[in-house]
Amino acid sequence: KVRHGGGDNTLSTLEKMKLLLHSPIEFTDLVGKNLGYLHGDKACVYSCNPNELHTPDYIDENNNIEIIERWDGWEGKMCTAICSDYVMTSGRHYVKFTVTSNDSWGEDTFRYFYSRIGIMRPIGLDSRITSRQQWCPIYSPIDCILFSEDLLEGTFAEHYRTDTDAWGEGDVHCCLYDDFEGTCEWTNWDSQEEGTHTDQRWDGMIGGSYVHDTREYGLLLDLDAGTLSMYKDDKCLGVMMRGLTGEYCWVANILAQAHGRPEQQNVRIERAPVPLEV
Image (cartoon, rainbow, N blue to C red):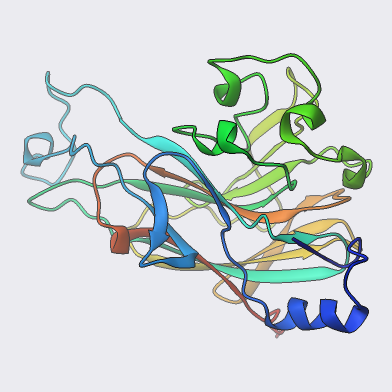
C-alpha cells in the first residue's frame, strides 16, 4: 500500500513519484456477491444478478415494465470495489471512471444497473468483511448490513483495523456521485443517527443518466483545498464536496438488480490528466 502525497516513509521521494505517475490504479478489494473483474482486469469490475427475474412477461407491448402477480421484488446485491492500495493523503489526484450500462429492455431479459463512484476512507479488510454478500460504504457502518448477523462491541477503528487519526478533523468518510440521479451522497461513519446524507444537490449538478449507454466521468480530489470536483466528458461541472481532510482512496459501489452480461454492466477506473479548462 502506497500513500500518495506522503505518509509512507519506506519509499524515497523519487520512488513515490514514479509510482504515482506510472503505477496502475486497480480495484484491489471486492466486497459483495456477484462482483468480479472483467476478463481478469482489476481496473474494471462488473456485477450481474444471476436471478433472471425480469422476462418478457414483465414488459408490455410498449416496452414498459408491467408489474404482475408473479413479480416478487428486486433481487440486487449492493457490492463495492475499493482501490485500497492507492491511498491519497495530500495534493491533487484525478481519475476517470467509465460506466457501462448497455442494458436494454429486450426480448430475452430485462437488466438494470446502478453505480456510484467517489472516495472513501481506507480501512482494514479481512475475510469477515470480504465474505459478505453485500456491503456499501454509505449505508453499511458497523451497526448496519456489515455486522447485522454478528454485531460487535468496540470502536470503528477496532472493527476495521484502521488508524483513524490519519483522517484529520473532517467528518466526510465517504462521498459518492450517484450516476442515476446525479446527486451527491456522503456519510460520517462516527455518527449512527445523523451520519448519512443522500440525494444532496450541488452547484453544477446536471442530473443523472437514465439511458443505457457508456458514460465517462472524472473526479478531481484536491486534498490541499479539501474539495472533490466532478467532471463529465472532460468538462468540469463543479465542486461536489468541500471540507475533506486526511486519507482517501477511490471506490465504486454497484448494484445490479437484474440479469445482465459482464460486458454490459461494469465500471472502469483509469489514470488520466486533468482536462484543460477552455
